[in-house]
Amino acid sequence: MPTAKDIKRRIEDRIPDARADVEDLTGGGDHFRATVVSPAFGGRSRIEQHRMVYDVFGDEVGGPIHALSIKTQTDVEGGRATPDPDWREP
Amino acid sequence: MSDDNTQIRDAIKSAIDENRVILFMKGTPEQPACGFSARTVATLQALGTPFAAVDILPHPAIRQELSALSNWPTIPQLFVDGELVGGCDIVTEMYANGELAELVGVEQPADAPVQAAAAQPGQSPPMQIQDRP
Image 1 (cartoon, rainbow over the protein chains, first blue to last red):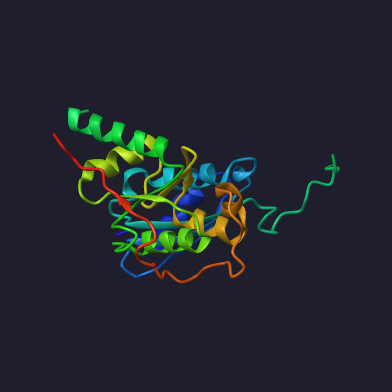
Image 2: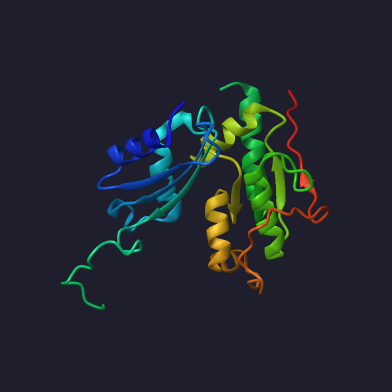
């Protein structure tokens, strides 16, 4: 059974510059909620962002990991990054 | 892929093509068999949109073929206009921020966002995909 820490580490290892907060919802090692912040999500649709997280686990989601609830944010959305100083209103 | 699976995949494709708003779920809208499915049903009902629903539980191949088709590992899965919208998380988020109402083409309910998973019976006929050899 993976722990929340395992899930967090695997997400952060695979998605560039990702920071993940993972919660084991039942304590049973099979229902998790992950909030993932990464600049790699920028310019991607929400579906694509969630797929990137699901892809870390492949067939395990729906198998040993019964449920993985996901919330994704780019750094800017998460309010954690400094906006690009060279950026101008188009 | 066996003939059975091909048949199931074709049935899934047709169902997605023929129903503008369609939810693949565990159980039925009247009797959801999973909290995530229940919550997604409740969200669609709160939105006030008619939707078709397919129970994926009767045969494991329904889920296999659906996930292969959609490239999405979990259930439920909502499709609008033939496109995968997402699962429970995305549907809930899009409901709360009004994107779902816009996508489906209904007015955003005044009491959004929804939190409870209170499925209301009898609002949409469940559609069954039968596994016939």
